Amino acid sequence: MKISKQARREARQIFRSCVINGALDPDRARQVVPLVAARKPRGYMGLLTQFEKLVKLDAARHLARIESAEPLSPEYQAQVQTDLRRVYGEGLEVVFTSKPELLGGMRAQVGGDVYDGSVLARLTALRESF
Image (cartoon, rainbow, N blue to C red; front, side, top):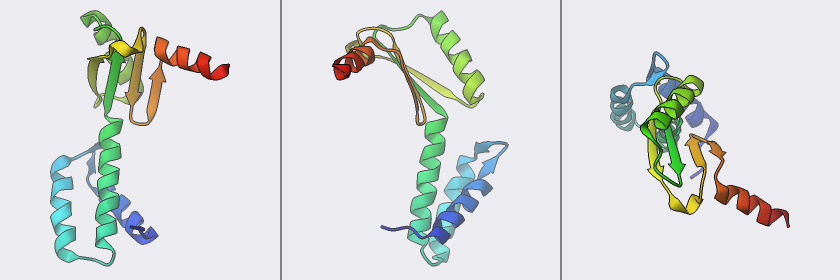
């Protein structure tokens, strides 16, 4: 479905109205959807689709996924959390997982930013360079 520029603009305005003190208020976001659906403005399905996309992008920006080959020590987890929160802000939720196929090192993803210091990534880059 193609979304009109007007629907994108209105979705951004609605999204901004749901942001309080720099963070998305989930209660406001939940209240907006039935109001828009009841009013049914022109192109409202595109507007709601774009609004959903903005909410998902915002949620991804506030979630850090940390993958490591071995479970990280609690001290190192605390240091990683501190460093990420310094860069991305205090509202960041951090999730740690073990992924043995990384072979070593660590991979961090926050929204669209990916920091990959794993052995697997280095081996893949080396293989592609040949």
